[in-house]
Image (cartoon, rainbow, N blue to C red; front, side, top):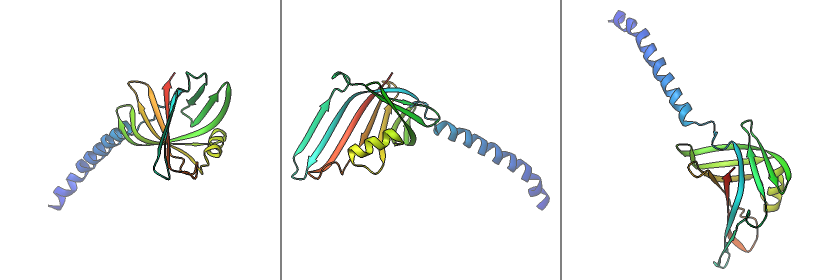
Length: 168
């Protein structure tokens, strides 16, 4: 009996190695290189939704590009991001944490920016870190990045800014 089990060990090892190899390849397919984010994205519009402490709701929409403004984010595969606003470029770094995918689209994720551009935005929005909720749609080449700057004002109980970007 011991000899039969001993003879099965190499076969079991091969099966386990093959299985783990298959599972690793599947994990690599599930865990993307986030190539869907690499490239240049232009801010099209943004929406601000806020609720005052008294419960009054406030909504604001700006067609950013139509109003003559220009803001583009360019993501590189080495973790560098260039933010260009009205011909002024500032560098930053980016990190993407994906929680849920749908094909090449990111259904739920977190985009964290650090560096010079991030520092400017953090100061303007009174944030400790610049972390966005991110959703991308591969079929329409769009990206929504949402932020909740709760400390923006003492008169609001909730503030959400939803930026809509289009891939260039």
